[in-house]
Length: 83
Image (tube, rainbow, N blue to C red; front, side, top):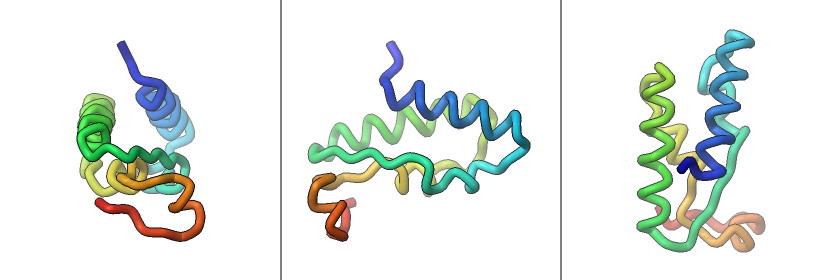
């Protein structure tokens, strides 16, 4: 079963392809937070796997940028993520 984030990334990937855009163009299109480090690792891996299956390369940095190990309430105030 796909996570909501996977469906979002799939739609974004499809749109980038349709419009001839690079994955890097979507750097600030998604932001996801989780307090649990394990959840962040799992989500990052699933999203990286999806993007690789879609034919994108060098996805690690953008996935890490999209999915953060942090409290979203604190992050909204400018606090940095823990990983």
